[in-house]
Every structure is written in structure tokens, then in C-alpha cells.
Length: 440
Image 1 (cartoon, rainbow, N blue to C red):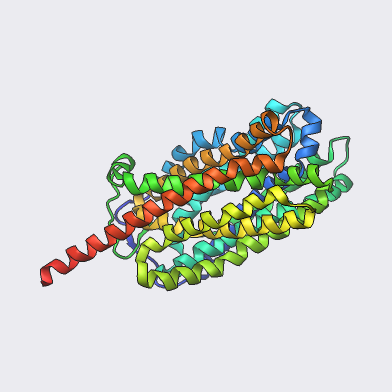
Image 2: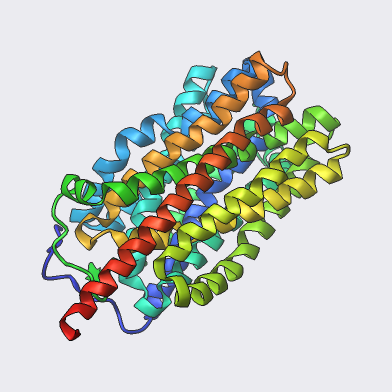
């Protein structure tokens, strides 16, 4: 049933309801389970590469472009449905579609079909996450919105890290439980896809909240094009900050397991368990740090604190990624990766809150869909560029390729963050002067 874009824009709920709280938990668990297949794929890259006999460049394209193609085509149309119709129904359809694409990936007889299946699985990243972040302000009280955003991110991160940590265990269980002569990695994807059924059943009992306007927020969203024209400067700087950062982050996240396996001759299962733990500790550990810094520094800098934090973290990530050149042992490499993950997760943690502040309710899902598309295009460039650097410049030294790709983009991210900090601070000061003018 079509929603009313004006009548439903009451104030945000004053307090949590049990169904709303459980819905936020369900959203996090669903996104986390579906993100775990990226960790499983990353740990299985060497087996996938052998099965299809593909080059490093093709692996980089798989880890980068495969998440963009179909998802980018569907993101904004699906977000338009989410902005106008039942978000709960759209959510259930996305869970079903993502599960089906995971099955297709497991059974693909050749690399093009496997690539297509992984591309279609990008629906989750492009359409589901924007949908979720458009729902959270309508489920959570305004004073708890940052907490709800960070809690959702924590559940997603837990699922993503579980894909790394339990990749070996999932393959072992899949080989034992699923008969036939399929490759172990194929059986692992089939086993993971089985989680779709209980998620669909649980989703039937979630809330489908009306759209609320946050305190002080305009209720007429206008068109997406008009919104972009009006706010083009901070949006362009924001894309430069987040997009450049994601080139570095995804270049490391998607290819690190393969790089460590090659350089240190370690087993994928061992690498997966350690990387899974690092991802979990970094993504969860940064959340209270981010929450405290945002609350403390916002008293002095207001909204400008967020781009400032992102720029500082981007600069801190440069020496971390450079240390990959000199790591002499697997343990040293894990320490460097953990440091890099912590500072970059800190940079990214408040991005959803920033977008919720900017986007009016009638455009919120579409704004998040557009943001996901743009950032994911940059994310695709990370493993794609690192794969080509490995193939054509450094002759298979993947750790070096990751570092060469990441350092320039981190510096660009820091520069854009500085410009966005200056712009935000100037806009805040101008607004304060305008508000004080009648009293003088």
C-alpha cells in the first residue's frame, strides 16, 4: 500500500517499542548474515581462482566490479519503491533475491555465470542497506538514533567478520552435510544460503514504521535532482572523502587473505580466523570511541567534527598501510592490518548519521541508494586497481600492490575531509550569525 508522504511525517517516536527494537536487531542480523558471504568469498579466493583458472586481474574484478553491476542498476529504482511503498515488503523481497543469487553463485558452471551471481548479490549492499538506514530514524527515538545506527553497524560487522572467521568451519560442515562432488567452496555457499529461510520467516513479524520527520527537519523533500543541485558542494566533498577512503579499505579487505596466503604460505582457514577476529575487534571497538569523540568534540565544533575525524583517520592509515612493505612475519602483517582496520572503521562509523542529517524523509532511501552506488563504485576500484597492479607492475606481490593502490587515495581522502571541515564550519558560523541578527 502506498504511503502518504506528508500525513505520516510526524515527529520521531518518543520512546522505543519492543517491536521497533526487535526490528532494528533483525535488520542488523539480516544484513550481517548476507554480508558474511563476502568474507567467505575472500577466504575462498585461491580455490575459486583454481576452479575457474582466472588471473589476478580477474580476481580483482570479481572482488570489485562484481558487487557493482546489477546492484547499481537496481539501487535507486528499488529505493524509490522503499520511499513510496511498504519498506517491509521491499526488505523481504531483497532477502529472497539475495538468497537466490547465492545459490546461483554456488552452482555456476563457469566464471561468467559465477561473476553474474556475485554481481546480483550486490543487491543487498546497494538496496538493503539504504532501506535500513531510511527505516532506523522512524523506529528509534531521536535521542537514540546514533546508538541505533552504531548498533546496526555492529551487527553487520559481526556478520561480516564471521564470514572470515568461520569460513573454514563452514566449508568443513558443508562437505560433511551436503552430498555430491561439488567443490568445498561451492558447498559452503549453498550452506550459507540456507540462512535465508529463517530470515524470511522472522521478517514477517517485524515493524513497518510510518515515515517521521526528525526535529527541525523540513518535510518537503522536493526532487532528488533539486536536492543534489542545492547541496552539490558538500556532497562532492563528501564523495571525495568517503570514496577515496573506500578505494584503500576495499583494496585491503577484499585481497588481503590472498596476499597473506601467497607471501607467508599460510592456510586460508588460519588467515580467515585471524582476519575475522581483527574485523570484529576493529569494527566493534571503534564504535564507543566514535560515539565518545562525536559527543565530546561536537560541543566545540558542531557537525564539522565528523569530516575532521575522517580526515585525521585517513592520515593515520597511511603509515599503517606503508608498513605492509616491511612486514617480515605473518604476525606482524596481522598487527598492521588490525591497526589499519581500526582507524578506517573509525573514519566511516558516523557516515550514515551524516547522511540522515542531510536527507529529507521523502528522499532518504534514494539518497542512501545513490550514496551506496557512488561509494561502491569507488570500492570496486580498490581491488580492481590492486589486481591490475599485481598482474602488470609488481608481478604477483599482492601486499605491495595493495599498498601502492591505497596510499595516494588516503591522501586524497584527507584533503577532501579538510575542505569539507572548512565548509561545514563556515556554514555553521554563517547560520549562527543569521540566527543572532534579529537580536542585535
